[in-house]
Image (cartoon, rainbow, N blue to C red; front, side, top):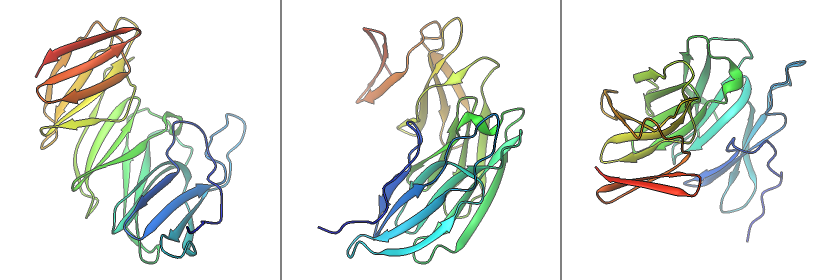
Length: 220
């Protein structure tokens, strides 16, 4: 069994270990933005899964917030500590060279909303408490983006089922499950809008939402 050399560091809720193809990626160093200081960029390291040896490393182009991996690339979400958006970069799995970089403006959202990355087929889905954006993972071209209404927070990574994006949401008077068509971002009616839940699964022809010790279910 091969061993990769650096322990992964970070905080709960920000993926900082991911593997695909012949690479396993870790992020070490500060990943938290403090109100009093800005930590230096974190370090992304790629290891060869066969030998356990470091293949390459890069400093992240901003403060690390999310990581996803496919056979051809690592996708790194970062912020620069300023309001208004964040950056997602695709780095070649072979040598860490830049394949593309995309800046996403997010209204008055700040870097402290922890944008993170999620892969689904050829789509790269970026989500944060107040927004969701879908890119073509091969080119970085933005397919669509949606911001939630004021006070509505996306609670979990998206669930994709039959080309629909499901994300549980929370707000003062409820929340429910927000839904968009994956192809074009068309918003679909919210499920259980008066229920605040944060655990969601979709199986077969039914969707399930856990709220406390109650599990809600309905057909799709």
